[in-house]
Length: 287
Image (cartoon, rainbow, N blue to C red):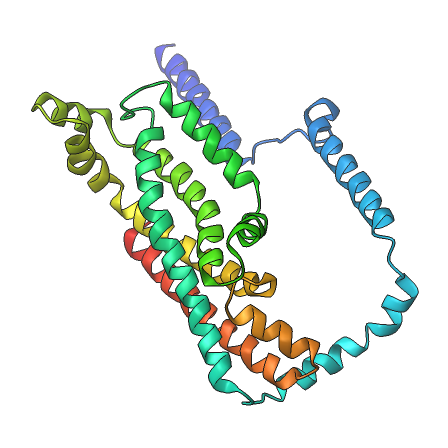
């Protein structure tokens, strides 16, 4: 009798183990078609479709003429591929101006972004109410596109590289301020409290605990922002901020497509180099 009960218990235990094993093997069932759950997605798609149709209606484009001229696009690319070295020295000079604008705007905005980020971070801000004020101010600056800031500076300072640097620095400073504030807020509180317990003031806390802990993130975000600065600087030349964008626009307006094609090629090669360098840096710092 005892042996039968033991065999029964053993069989029952084996069945339970087998049932649990089969349950683990089966993929989890994901409910689909839940209207209440998918409602935000449906609203977003409907709103996106409505805005797209409204934008096309307000565009008031001559679609018949656009379709007729579309085949010419291929010919333009072919003509641009016949690179011309006409006035190459001027093209190279404007390219150097573009890189200069991107680099100087990066340096100025990086320094200002570190200061504003330190003041906006809730865990190290010297005055707590200052944090939301600075974050709101930075959010407002970021909401205005870079070309708008450049045009505002151009209206007051005139055309040239200085306007491009200042206009580009506005948006980049707001970007760095918001990003660095988030990086600083992720620093463990124990490290900050340990430095404060040693009698360090606000500046010493920042340079001794916060900045070293956030250095890898700062390097990665700086490399990414330089790539963005270069792309925007290349375009801003078309609105009078100096750089190779003006050369491309002037060459296209005068139908010197070969010269424009060479300028675009230079922009592309340098942008590719920045992308490879940025990827390498982000992999090294593991961000």
